[in-house]
Amino acid sequence: MTSFNLKSKGVIVDIGSGDGKFAYKLAKKNPEKFVIGVDSSTKPLADVSRRIYRKPQKGGLPNVLFIRSAVEYLPEDLTAVANQVFVNFPWGSLLAGIVNVDERIWENIKRICKKGANIDIVFGYDGLKDKTEVDRLNLPQLSKNYIYNILPKKLFEMGMDTVRIQKLYSSLLKTYPSSWAKKLGFSDGRSCYHMRVKVL
Image (cartoon, rainbow, N blue to C red):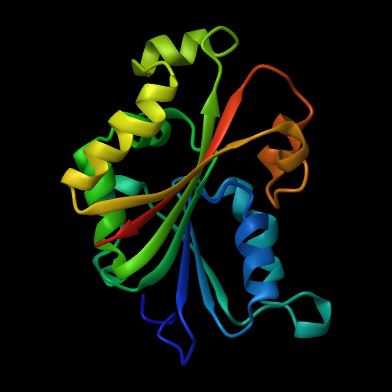
């Protein structure tokens, strides 16, 4: 897996790519950068994976690559390559690893980053509407104390500094370049946050 070793001005990794549209849009908007989309399931990525190999005039992009991997087993070839990492609307075990600050998850994300890299995470859930998933994953209540104090403190102990936390309201979610964002943007009740973490 060395095809991403290009003369780019930085590497962006999108973890939990889903349908791949976010990574594709990033690559199209930033042709000087190389974008790597990572997801444990390849089925949702099928359409965009075929598109990137077309001719440029038909939507092909030479600066994006999709790989199949769970965050717990990110390839060693990705070690210290990323200038920027995105995790958009994680769910299941990835969400649990993020908000519970599972060392396996966070250390793997940190491993693929260069020093000073930004990790941008957009996450959220509702204790009532998502009760089954909250109980199954033992997710904490997204209180102000947890979001603004406990979570940043745990991350700092692992060598990451939380430089921004912003609550995302419906109007912002509607403009976020993610398929999940658009769905959530038209619903009520879920508190969504954008958190930027810098690798020290």
